[in-house]
Image (cartoon, rainbow, N blue to C red; front, side, top):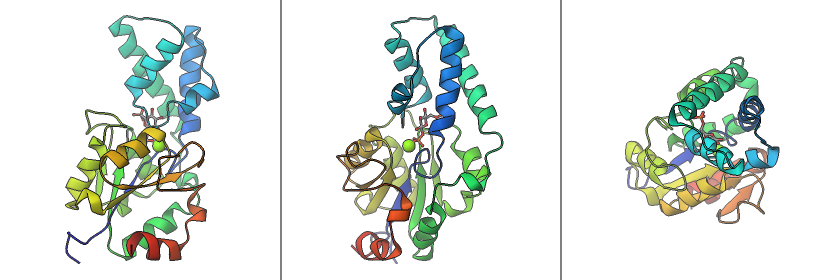
Length: 222
Ligand code: B16
Ligand code: MG
């Protein structure tokens, strides 16, 4: 199949392949408590798909607090150390339901498969849950300068796959990620709540709702 016809399939990581949001929540909450700041589950929802730096900026803003740049950097490091200790024992049982089946269908049909994540911890997480071999390309928070909803992460993934963005589809759980995919000229499938992901072309609660026939007929054979 020539690359002009080949389908590129780009997966977000957190909330699509693995549920790290619960670990990010605990790490941010522990940090907030140590500083006497408030941080709730609702606040955490707003940090999905948002970079680490931007997340801390938002938490400071919500708490009407300003800190010195050196303290900002120290707290970022501290949050990441807490997060890394929380995910230290992550294993393949933390793959979200049916994600491996869906990856295998695209792999069997020779689609280009990429990761497009804001996380700087994406590679070790994929290794821990043993899904790295499925990915032809990994673009993560260490490669991009502009965070979602900027399309940079997905355009880089398409470019590295050698596939036109118009022939790529994205699976995303965050509003900013759906917006990034649409700005990149890609079809965007939401994973999560249809009432939140209103800009997606179609939303599934999770991959158990995405059957092989739909993938074959409506995604690969569109
Ligand atoms: P890290 P995604 C995002 O990953 C998460 O959704 C977001 O909550 C997190 O703050 C961000 O990664 C940065 O993660 O601190 O590991 O670099 O959803 O784009 O895969
Ligand atoms: Mg996500």
